[in-house]
Length: 218
Image (cartoon, rainbow, N blue to C red):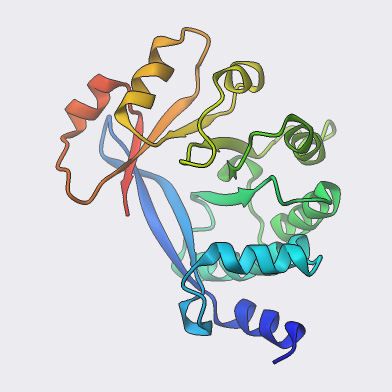
């Protein structure tokens, strides 16, 4: 199978899950995290797909085509007016301006409010890549802006200095210890998101007490 045919199948057969993110103060659904799945094409490891797209030089194009399918799925489910969290591997994006303009076209096509688009910046550890990406998605002529979220992973721990300087709307912490460190820093004003492990049974009150604002289970 050629690379072009493989990517066509990946785009056409990708499956999407919309995971509710809850506001712990009133237990309402705040928005949805979008999980992309390529199992049907034989790629249970998503990182392999993005690595391959990056190596082929089509990552931005591939992400935009996937995003179009995401919005089609959201439209069918009636979620277009909800806050949607999209994971973006910012350290892979080489042409941030192409990606941004293509996303603007998709937003117009599906009549999306920019305030409901939240980019989860995974791998946001390189100042140069991050600065270029943020500059590209900012539009001085547009009153609405997409929100950004920094996501902590084992490979990319949270950079407190970066959070202080860029003031993202959201930060996803990997542990309650990270939540505590963020909340103790008076300069961090971001909403804190936490993924509840399946083997844990925290109450909303317990998580709120530690400093978590929003939570989901996956």
